[in-house]
Amino acid sequence: MLSEMADYPLRRSLPAPDVTSEQHIWNWAQNAPLGPQTRLQRPQDEEALRHIITHRSGRIRPIGTTLSTGDLLAIQHEQDTLIDISGLTGLLRSSESSATFAAGTPLNEVYETLKTLGRMLPASPGVIAIQTLAGAIATGTHGQGLGQGALADDVLHIRLLCADGTVAEFDRDHPWFGALQLGLGCLGVMTEITLRTVPLTVFTCFKSAVSAGRLQEEIYTWNKAFTFNKAWWFPEDDRVHVWCSRAATPGERQRYRAGDGDAVALGAGDSSLNATVDQTLTHMQNDTRILGEEGRHFDTVTRFKDFTDVTGDIYQLFCRGIAAPQINVEIGIPLARAGQTIALIKQWYAEAHPHMHYPVILRCTGPSSAWLSPAWQQPTCFFGFVVYYADDGTLSRDGIAFLQEVEKRLAAQGGRPHWGKYYHPALYRWRNLYSRWDDFRHVRAALDPTGAFSNAFTDCLLEVR
Ligand SMILES: Cc1cc2nc3c(=O)[nH]c(=O)nc-3n(C[C@H](O)[C@H](O)[C@H](O)COP(=O)(O)OP(=O)(O)OC[C@H]3O[C@@H](n4cnc5c(N)ncnc54)[C@H](O)[C@@H]3O)c2cc1C
Image (cartoon, rainbow, N blue to C red; front, side):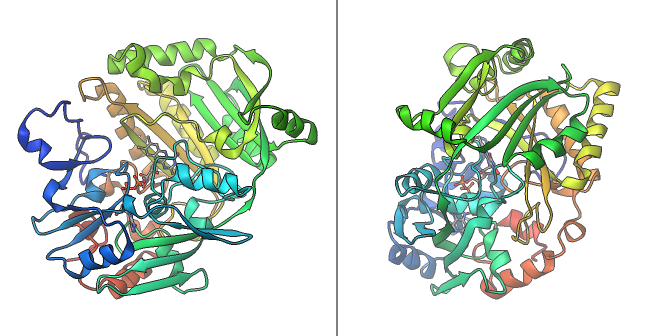
């Protein structure tokens, strides 16, 4: 997040240019210092965490993998504390239809553990799984599919350490649960999270490359017809790469089970997107000046070459991203207005020909019960935009100009930004966008009256003086 329409932060050059920068904790993207090294605590259990909270001298910010923006994570004063929760990890217990994990468990581990139990989450995954469970929940991290919501929508129970060191437990029927589901780290420190699980299912994903001519209508068709749909839109070539996934047939399942456990490709490769991919790769390489192995994250588009249908579990099909430092902007638009928003972007593209660093990523989800979810109570289409950092930590000027312009246009359509990604708060009227905004503030004031778990950015966001 950025407080004004300023440029996005640059990455620090590595190795660190001066000794002082090593005295700081930096976020994962290496584009924001979060606080002094001396103010970082890494408790190994809940008792140690309680001790840190009750003996604090300033404020506290819980952090996970620190993939979110520096604004959301940073502490401001020398007596404040960053609490890295990665020591609280692992499966704590499971039942037939649920599993409880320590809050710092990486999503990779959550998914792998569930798979060994023959289970999965109803929510489909995002593109990567290095996030902590708590960090992913707290910002509304999501995948795709109208029949499911964000990871936060699969939460059944949260155990929270409060500012006075007491434990608060929240079930779905608690009147504040919608606030706890997506709390931005401002309500307390989650220590245990219980998730709803369903039987592990094998899916087949059908991939195609089509004209973008009817994208504003087809986005609805694909999402209604398939359990999970994801699309990458290349406006420059007027093409869309579409992934449509449904439960595998008995024959597809048999073929998958006969393999070595990896996803199974079906049929010969389709090369109809190859020229579009080459054009995008040229933009990405020109913009970042990254060639060769260092640019392995460019495989996120290279893999679209010679694409094939594929059978596998949900994590094998959709959780395939390569995490690389980037500026990512993702704006949720109510599904009913997705088509007109696509038409608006098309019109803008035709008039202005803005620079396209990366395709537009389209993922729709069902309604969320989290009060601050961009998909609160309504199906939502998320429009995602990415610009990768160059080798020297800079960002393509044209790529950034595109992000700034497209965010303005989507905000004007009533868009709501992803809390863990980059956005410009000045573009949004939160109270108009979120009917439970003030309710969230009241829960925060009740759970954490002194603002022990807030920072300067969340104070400003939630208008806490
Ligand atoms: C390369 C990349 C790919 C991504 N892909 C997707 C995607 O596919 N879908 C999607 O929706 N998002 C995606 N994201 C966004 C990402 O999922 C969020 O930024 C998420 O919050 C990161 O989790 P984290 O563990 O890094 O949390 P952090 O960034 O460390 O923290 C996020 C928030 O959680 C709070 N928090 C952390 N631990 C606790 C705790 N124990 N109790 C209470 N609050 C806590 C923090 O205070 C902070 O407010 C992506 C981001 C990147 C950089």
